[in-house]
Length: 157
Image 1 (cartoon, one colour):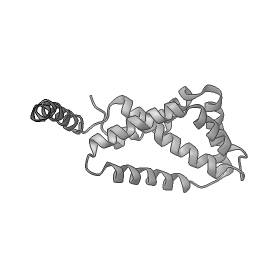
Image 2 (cartoon, helix red, strand yellow):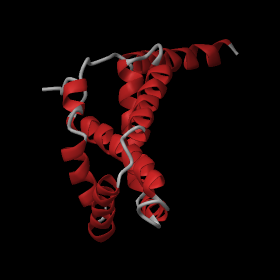
Image 3 (cartoon, helix red, strand yellow):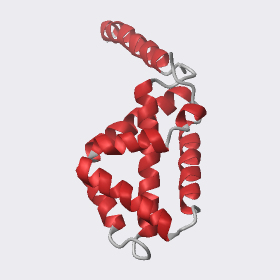
Image 4 (cartoon, rainbow, N blue to C red):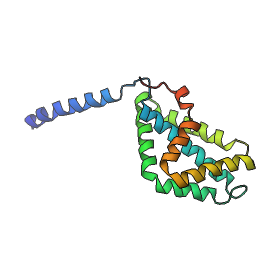
């Protein structure tokens, strides 16, 4: 029994040291993490905007967004995974609270954009572009429309 403990103890110490080192904040986000943050923010915007425009100004917009989400679920989950790891690393003690607060802020903002025919026409153009060109178009839109991410977070050099 004692030899088993002595054999397992160094492995546990190594694993503990590795996870402690991995969680150390860098005080910046890498370019892939910035891209993931933009894409998740843009996804929140598109979901909220599509749902709001659906029926009143733009019939079928919510369904169009859901179709995109289903077709690109793997890529959206990968972006979300990168984002979660970055937040967990940068805010190790309260990352869940902070990410929930940030996402709630985005949803509240997106739900309070004045709902007009012009706004929904812009949403329709975005939806049509991602429907035709796929995830690459979505990512390009995110870079243009969610570029304040680089103001919110320092980019690692």
